[in-house]
Every structure is written in structure tokens, then in C-alpha cells.
Length: 233
Picture (cartoon, rainbow, N blue to C red):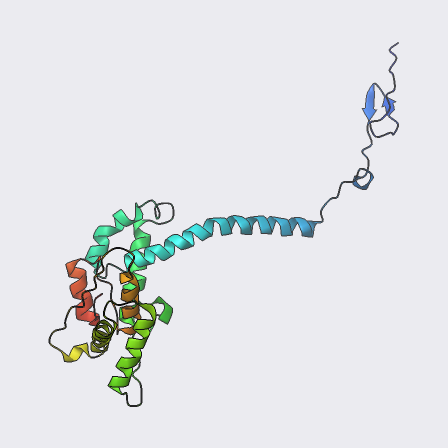
């Protein structure tokens, strides 16, 4: 005859021995300090984890999308964007999120949507139509205000002459269609970080339909100039 010894329960209870098998009675969660979340709490936690995962993934994708819009907007010609689409989506910053079809679809959203359907925030500066002032404008007073604004942010070598020249150039952009040709505005500085970019930014904010043409190809520049008549910066 085999004799089986009884062992005390790990939790202080008693074991019942039947045919050499132990029937263990687990303690209630509250007896050992374990909190079991309710179904509503479990659901809320699952939703929160999913939301945080989406947010972590969406943030870099949204930033890449904003950058892609700027890149695509540099190619108003459909033939140009078709040639460049594959190269664009292979760039490290775009490769994880976009394909060639995404680039072409974004191009159509930017350039094939009519101006009436575009939101103001989605328009490029050279696409925006500014409503003219209803009253009379004193040109001399307006030029003086522009000069004051320029002097407030830019340190010129010859403040009177250079701010006056920039002011005249800004005013000329608002009636550029009345001229057969337009002068260049040359901005130079003795070294880097002297405020050239800041001056260009001011000129863009005060000019009519400004277009930054430094990185545009000749065909794209020709098409934009023909369609929007922007002053190029």
C-alpha cells in the first residue's frame, strides 16, 4: 500500500488528496492583492495603445508629406514631374511612405485643381490674387511706409538709397504688367549671415505673387511666368 504525504498549501490552505492527485483551490485575486481591470478599462487601454502607435507612425509621415508637397510644387509641368517622380519617391525621406503614384496624385491635386476650389492655405504665393484697396493710395506715403518696414528689419550700408530702391522694386511688382521689361534687384553682402535671406523674405511678403526661382529649371520658370506673371526672387 502506497502512503501519500499531505503538504501544506502554498497559500496556507489545505490540500485534498484523492488517488494521489492534488485538487488546488486558487485564492481570490483580492486575497493576494491583484487588481483585475474591468472590460471597459481593458478596452480603453487597447484603444489608447492603438492611438499611440498610429500617432508615432503618422507624425514622421505627416512631416514627409508636407516636404513632398513643397518638392512637387517645384514642377508645374506634367512631363517634368513624370520624369522626376521615381527619383523623388526613392529619396530616403519619402521611400518608407510614398510611391510614384502618390507623387503623381499629389501633383494633380496641386496643379489641376482650379484656384476657386483651392483653399487659401494650399495655394502657392504666386497663385494668390490680392484684392485691390478700394480707396485712393498715396504712392509717396506708401513708399515711405515700405522703407520704414525694411529699415526695421534690415541693416543697410546706405539706408536711404537702398531701402528706397527696394521699396520702388516692391511697388513695381504690383504693376509689372504695365511694363515691357523689369529691372533686376541684386542683393549682395560681404560675407555669410548678413541678412540677404531675411531681405528676400521681406521682399516676398511685400511683393505681388512672389516666386522663388533659384531651383527652377528654364521650362518650369517659363510656364509659371506665362501663367501667373510673378516677380522672381
